[in-house]
Picture (cartoon, rainbow, N blue to C red):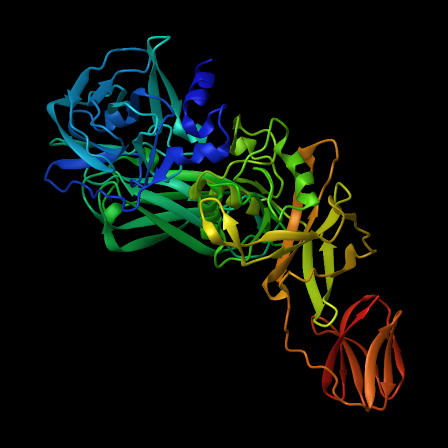
Length: 632
């Protein structure tokens, strides 16, 4: 019951609101203040959060709390030290609220053991010196702030954009009906941490304590192909760190140790990410990789319990590179959609492993809505639609905590709340194994406006199901109205045409597990081919279960409009495709036929026709002059 109440209260997951209304409850700061570590002798900062980047609020008035748990392990590590100050990031508020720094023994209704009022400053860090310092004695405590909100539009919580730590993402509100505080973890709502740190003062603070916080390695890697692992360390003690040792072991190989030297010293509470690349395994199978950090500045680490992490991965020789299909539901009526467009743009710029397609439906419709996009509303899973919304490879991301209009999703569509959460979802999808490779070629006839798309593919293993091929045409730089963006908004990645059937067409694989399909379409006159792209993907499809339509792999490319391929100018020979023949009408000396990727397939010397074995797009070079033809 408690979780339901909290979900109803937290603005970003309110059951009563659409995602269009939810997002303003989060407000990114324009000029976030970055707090540096305390440098006073005998003092250090302690906390689990990152830098302050935004504000979060509940859609209600009342009294709220943000808390950091100092675990028993950390309270023991720093036993005897005093908490002499609290540093808390406060979000926005309209009136001067009542605010207190509080320390609790537990979250079960106990009264604070410390409550000190302070006058908060909005949209920045607040450092509050404790009138009565609190001495750590090895027992777990909670420390943070309590603040009142007199308006439903207040955003009092200052949060970071890091992965949530269960010790630093606790927020709550006072429930009048139960006369108690109700709590939740921001990580369960796809947010990061409440920005809370403390200043510890004492004679016996650890001088050198390097903690290995994260270890990154792909879940699947290709056998005999180089890969990398990353590690993130945090300086959890008072002295700056300029170097440390890293020891790593992959599988049963001998451990290797090297020294990581930092150009700039790592101050108290700061983090640093290192990379170990050039790794390779030679056989398929499951492997463990273990990394240990040690010897900060060449001396023994004073607390070794947090120095080692282990992760597992699987090596497969049949893997092929994966690209992710990002389908975005957005309409001109959606006032919050421009914000999410910017999030996705920030994610996709300068990378080609994400194919972005925009369906103009979900929150009403507009002039760019097409019937196929209406059909894809099925992926919401019922219970209403909303925008902005997204799908990634048509996967249900429930296990990753993806949110919809009614809490955690049970279908592929979710609400893209922030760049960090969307990035984590994309990383997850990119890490899923793919066993089918795709290639796209295209030919556009400027005179007839006929576009021919050829997609070839190859499966490196036997697939469990019979997947379908899907081909989308999208257009960029369409100028038009957008709520929240004005009358001259630049719409991009707009789905113009599904060249296959709505749910895809059957694929016929040959004896070598390859397939080859070709589609043609005459572009509408208002479409600009120079702004268009083609997206091809292979996906499973189950008409009775929207969670069994996962995309197996995707490829995309910008149309080759205006490609520099010459046309025959001689009146001596004309080149044309007739059935499965390339006709050469006229005199010439030498002719050669190439695939679109440059592979020679046929030659002729004076013959009037060349018989072709397969349909497709070809380049015919006659006496040095090139011409594209389509053999059907």
